[in-house]
Amino acid sequence: HAALSRRYVLCEVVSEDPRCRQCIEDRVLGLAVRDAITRVHGDYGLACCSISFTGAGVRAARGCGVPPAPLTVRVCPAVKYLNAYTGTVLLRCRKDSYRLLCSALPFVRCLESRGQRYPCFLNTLHVGGTIRTCQKFLIQYNRTQLLRLLQNCTNEEERQCIQKSLLSCSLTEEQSESGDEEDDDGTE
Image (cartoon, rainbow, N blue to C red):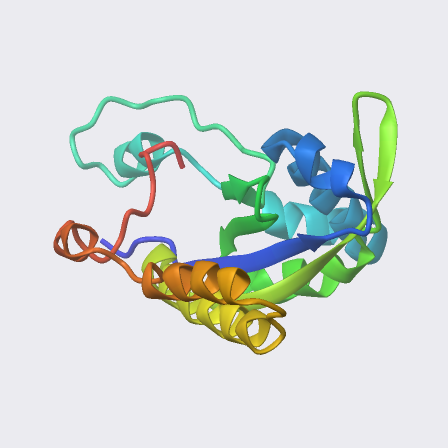
């Protein structure tokens, strides 16, 4: 059977307020992205980006012998990964609607958390077909950023710290053998 194709959008949260990254939660970020999609593309755009069914329900509908599970529609795009420390975000959406998602991301202007509004924006770094390709891109991106920092070092201690970070920018062999796709937890 043909699986639903996905796209993974790798972004970084950019804010001048250091408290912004500390308050980032996947729920808050997902709501901000959803609101931006609605503002830019209306209900149609939100519906295009929101259609996601549970895997068991889809198999049952195709007659694979799996008892029918209730089909659920999730508010997407799904936040698959969030690192509040680095501000790195990985969003998942259907392949046929990733352009709608990407065109709405510049309209995320702030994140609200705990009654506070933090001005920020999402910088799209990469769009990939798998989580693995986004990981590889992020390693290269971080390596490039560290090289830029290395050029601006003012003392030997900073230089050694950044060189150590550069050497650690790689996927381990164990991760490589675990498979190319750590896609989903089965809750589509």
